[in-house]
Image (cartoon, rainbow, N blue to C red; front, top):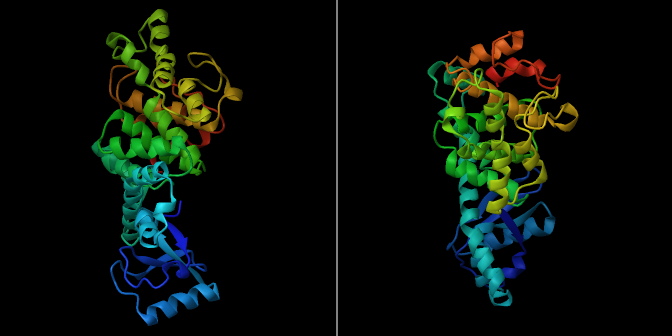
Length: 337
């Protein structure tokens, strides 16, 4: 999404000072550059330069979206807009300001060398501290356009509110996000589906006995296992009751986050034909993080060890080593994203 909208120089008429800044959009390199700061008089020379750029079609005059109401009021167009539209626009202003701040932070950070993600993952595993990776995912997700759809907007909201501390859910969200990018999933809408599913998939666990959740999953009975996987249905039920608007793809990811490509997953034994790549990614990342955290066997294990055991096909009780050709060749790459 552009954080700007275009205007015609003629719309300013004889107004020489205004409370919004003017930017020039360079058609050649697709960049926005400040031309005139807010409350700075528009001199004859500045006006002629803007007129030349506009008439020569070398660029366009732009104003930040968050200053749209100010612009409309200045040029006398605000009274022509319905009040309900004005209110809706005002509600978006804060979101737009936040978006613009993130864009500016990103522009500045581009000039500051960030450590390679690979070294960040290695340090996170060694120190058992994933916060730097989580915060990096937060910053990237917050840069998603705000006008693609509800699920993308929700992903930005979740990231902004929740991706600021180190916990199991945030580890799963951030690693799923970066692993998906590693496997060439790069559309914001697809990544947002995965992000939201990662956040929401296990909310149904609140309805499952803590003894089952925190017990050794390699020793629970068949009935307890069936009870555990009911959390998938509970998660969807809570989502439907809440009225949260999610894409169908995101809902399917939530439904299938414990399914396996060979049809041995839960709760519906869906095979690879019914799973997309994001489903497999979420199952894989959730599994290695939960196994590493001790939620499956009751004992914590280094994430690196878990990944290498899966890659080697080690017959360890409770460890899923059966992954499709879409995942298996890339298993160890999760350690050097």
